[in-house]
Length: 323
Image (cartoon, rainbow, N blue to C red):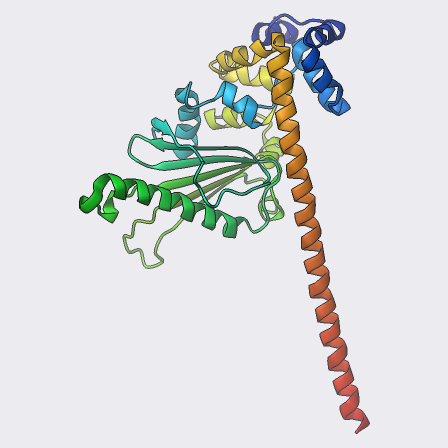
């Protein structure tokens, strides 16, 4: 059996580029939006409709259609169970409205908050570009999540409330492009943070962080040697060779790709999702560039201050010698 035949089984019968373009042109609104896409994204759309590549799963609009925990919670449960090494059962998806610390104009391209059967909160966030000051931002974000749980539990328990009723809170950040502080520890790509006392005292801290550098995973992950590798491959690549490799190792993902392939014949929905993703990416890129420029300006100010201090020191030394 050839690879082409396998891909056909996964994504459906392939068609020509001309036929793919005709499908888009069949919806006037979709075609107008498509014409405004950058050339590389037009190519992505056409290749997907042709049946020769997948979709970028982690953009919010695509994710919500394939892994939406409100519709198919078992899929996200499988990923979280594998990542966290414990059985996860989602009981509800918590709306983000009302959260005071949600970033506006951020680099986030997917953000889902769920509550598990045991009461824990799990926030899954996908970032196009990893944030500078990762720890500082995450601590503020985690504080918000802990207080959301505290408010909910206290309202439910009323006078019977006790802090022992609070459950662990997890922040899981998947970075499509990770920051320097994560890149320097490559080839490691899963970064976990848990708080403990240095004396060994048994103190239960609620906050748990996991950062995943998908760019590092892609650079080192030649084989899919575990179920978690399979998930990282699914979430980070739409390349046909990766799809084939994934299905050969873990056939259960074939069902997910079948759902993805349905959009090959839905140009209106497909183009709308791409358009939404591109708008968010433009915002993310602009904010990323602004943050990088601000960082460069701060570094220049620091360098200038150091040079001025050095000049003043030299002037002071020269003044003493002249005396």
